[in-house]
Amino acid sequence: MENANFIVSARKYRPTTFDSVVGQQNITATLKNAIKTNHLAQAFLFCGPRGVGKTTCARILAKTINCFNITDNIEACDECESCRSFNEGHSLNVYELDAASNNSVDDIRNLIDQVRLAPQLGTHKVYIIDEVHMLSQAAFNAFLKTLEEPPKHAIFILATTEKHKIIPTILSRCQVFDFNRIQIEDIAGHLKQIAEKENIKAEEDALHIIAQKADGALRDALSIFDQIVSFSGNEITYEKVIENLNILDYDYYFKVTDVILKADVQQSLLIFNEILAKGFDGHLFLTGLAEHFRNILVAKDKATVDLLEVGKNIKEKYLQQAAQTKLDFLINGLNILQEADVQYKQSKNQRLLVEVTLLKLNALQNASLTGSEKKNDLKTVFNEPLPTLIRRAKPSKTTQKKENNIQPTTPKPRKVVENNPKSEGKASDIPVGGLFNSKLASKTSLSRYKDKTVKKEQTTATQQSGEIKPVALKEVLNVLEDFKRKNDENLILKALLTGKIETENEMVIIEYNSRAVEETINRFSQDILDFLRLQTGNYSIQLRFKLNEIKQEKIVYTEQDKIKKLVEENPNIKLLIEKLDLRPE
Image 1 (tube, rainbow, N blue to C red):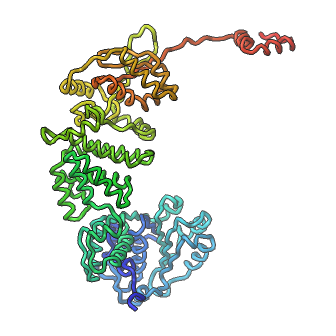
Image 2 (image 1 turned 180 degrees about the horizontal axis):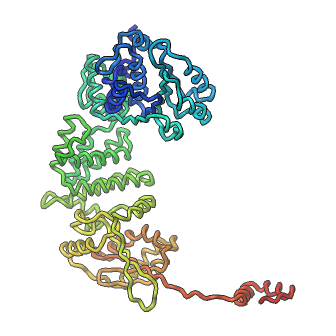
Image 3 (image 1 turned 120 degrees about the horizontal axis):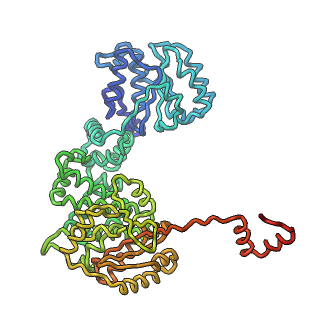
């Protein structure tokens, strides 16, 4: 019998007063002041995500303005005849319309007919139209005049999750209230109160996980809460919530970060394999690890530690791990994870992409370790020298477009005009180099093209790490021939590498004559540089592409010249001219 009378928490603990509404204090305070000063509008639009209290606030407002004994705190008394009829669900002063299923012109006309009738009990008749964006265009138009000039006793409250679908003429006739997503702390606190009322023991970390899963919707959080209670009984633990909701545990991210901080490649790959064996997606792991790194970054400063939306126990773990992690590792690590996130959907071997990302993170940490802490096996993995081969992953076309649009903050390649006797056109230099061009890579800019200052820093770092070796032109040409053979199907690339190639100390200069090949350069420049360095064994090689636009003289052709050219290309035109006895002038 108890199951037959069971009421879900979302209905049982639905707020009935303004003060009991969770996470929307600015809106409830405004509505209470409007009632107190008798400045109520006749049309409201409540918009925001699902489950944040739009319809609930509409009902509380309708109940309060018709209460005969409003309290000093501007709340309904719950004792007068109007409040009792509202609580029992048969109030004649509140009319609710679900626009999702009643969106025709006839439905709106029936509502307009009812608007003319005065309230039988109380002072106002309140019309709540839920999911108002579902009304048809004709229904909106039929509603306009009534919404603009309703009877004094009528108040309209429109609620929607998609404000952008409401036509401007409706918006201009309403007071608009934007409901926010409810904060995780507010949801967790509300769940704790409900757990106490239901005599349920609940761990704080478990309630935080439920609040995070709800994504700002209190109704969703209450539904998940009921689900967990059904699963675990009257004791909600962190482990049971993780198990029931199939969530990747925080502990995995803490463990994988710990082994990365030790540059332990084997353990990081084994942990990732364990995660996959439990049925979790590699993309979920990537995004979760990026969020974990972000949380560690936030925890490094007392001023930002409050941005952590986790329980107390988890927050303590973040503070401990933040104390062991260097800032430059976190920033470069987030950059590596973000690039892997972008490339994940395009990758044909997604597991390998995640594993390579873990290798990069381990190698990044290994570069900062000293003495006996360094892992020599990492050097073998990346085929010495390590800093050169760990570089920014090649961006997708979408990423390249975004980078090109952020021109004010991204250093641009310098345009250099050279005195070349064979060319009168413009020339521009595009230097090529990976993120880890030196041992000081973590201190350099993360942009694709480095400016002059960064070049100097890289040169200094290279001199510190080893002697700069000049490169021989003949050797470069042989290596580029091999590269062309490996990419035989790409005719544009072959033409680019067949052009003029020069060497100057450690710099290899490749000239090209048209901007049409710049997309090919963007795609293959880093591959060419890595291939050159790997095949020659000279990791101080730098690569530059130089544009030479040769200006051609414009020749003005006469009509006779044009006809002569046509006749040369097609003898039939000559026969046609003779046959028709044409005399072109």
